Image 1: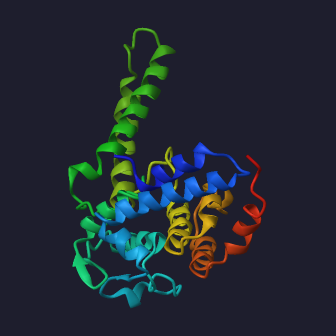
Image 2: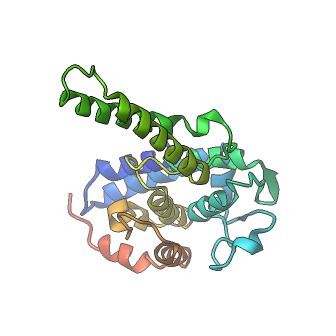
Length: 255
């Protein structure tokens, strides 16, 4: 199933600016339809489009940057899921309580590659990928060493033994403490910010929706930090991109 992010991006990729008036209307109609369809079956998206709330018990303790307590948005949902992933705390959407993983699934329908589900610390599923990568790298290195030593066989047994043990310990320790997204996919913070801009414009039926493209949004390419993203999210909530989007669509190209 395509995520809401993927569907909206497919609309963006169908036309390139500058847009005709007909293209603006087509983009707005398609994105609005995708949001409306998802909201009909996804409580999180419904609450976001209604300008509702998302919170959890004890949010005040995690609100040190004075951001995660506020109206329901995709980016705020991401931060709440991130803060409650380890504790597996239930989340309130519009006053109704949902299990953490139920909200994580609702979020995943919209934003790919987030990996915000709670996985028990001792679950084998938590460690499968990291151990597979560790042993894949170990066998590759052991094979390269063995090629330089004829008669040793396909793998250097010393490399397999020592690197395998040390690598496994490192992989288990790191994975127990931290769960990362797949770096080959889009960063969920950027995707959530993109959807928030689109949701704000859908909610107001704004023609600026046609210009709300991911390449237009500021983003950090490598390390992500709240000091960059929190002000950006607040700017979207305050309709801070309206003037820039209007300039981009001020003079549509002629058919």
